Amino acid sequence: MFSGLPLIICLERMNYDPMYKFYSICIVVFIILSDILDGFFARKLKHVTSLGKIIDPVADKICLMCVLIYLIDTYQLIFMIFFILLSIRDLVLISFTVFLLLNKDFVTQANSWGKYFIFVTMIMLLFYIYSLNYYIASILYLLSIILLVVSMAIYIREHLKIINSNENT
Image (cartoon, rainbow, N blue to C red):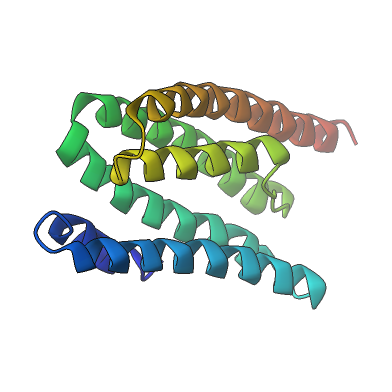
């Protein structure tokens, strides 16, 4: 979560000084590794908490939104569309999560489709940030949009199932 601002600074400066490209890559690797290791150790040590289930995706989203803001500045419309769609998805999911937490004392967890979406999105962002291959980046962008919609639909279905099952019991 705290890596978002240093990452943006490095991304902004990497066109002027090649060392900032290296720094930004180090920050991206740190963000990815810390997220993976945090989840791994929480599960391994059986320290998975409801608060952790909520804070971890929020921290991920803060970093993701920082990168998207940088990309909106660079690519404009294509990432503004992505940002809007992601914001809608997140507002819907947060609404369900808060409802389930407050009314059912239930905290949802990420599902496989949400993880696929984040994984493909991160790769896509790296392709755009570092101008690796525009054709592959475009394919990854479309795949990210598809996974965004699919994962949102699956989350909604799962959340409604929990709401309905608790109402019927």
